[in-house]
Image (cartoon, rainbow, N blue to C red; front, side, top):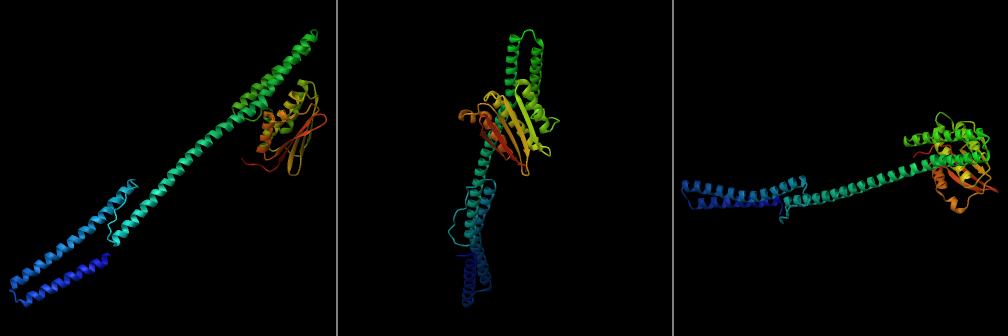
Length: 332
């Protein structure tokens, strides 16, 4: 029964009771004193009835107020008891309980999302750590390890020269000079790597100048023919230089270490939509095990980061490493 219906019933009852009591007192011709006393008693009775009903409403509203306070304090599982009267206060209690259920579900969802976010952050941190380790491994492999390999070859050549031509110390002096220069270059490369800098050969130089110097150094150290051809009308974009230079270093190292090449041709061609770098040698080529080596993998990764592709093209004899990079900058 709704509050309005309850109010109408109680009001009607009190009105009828008052009318009946007044009619009885008038019919009995009671004295005025008794009439006044009867009216007073009727008023007291009406107040008691009103108080009784108001207390029930007050207790139920107090329960809802207490539940709202507990809900605000974080006790999301607290609910209002079902009074079973079917009036507006019961409807308010049901609506409050439904609101509590919704809030509890939303809080649970937020907690789940927060946990997922923490897990994702931890995964991202682990991935960033792994990526940094892989980056350092690539840089060490593409720079310092190759220069150490060059040092080993020069030291071996110096030893052979000292044995075969002891009467020509100038040859040994030249080889020792190249060993010292390469050692200093390795030291600078390591410092640049630790400070996340560009390859030292690119500092203050364009890609073509740095590549030309690298090819000249390889030819001088290893006594082989190394030729570079540069068909470019503009400079290689700075965002592309480092990765291309590392690919060139790795391809040259593979030609020297694995293919035992005696001649290397390097060509850079600037097209309308891309730059194409090719490194060709006359060595033994690469078998399947070598094609999947770490050096080839790092070259592919570098080309992919530039938005380009790397291909291994067999020759007779030798191998061509071909890299095509689009001119449009690829954002990480």
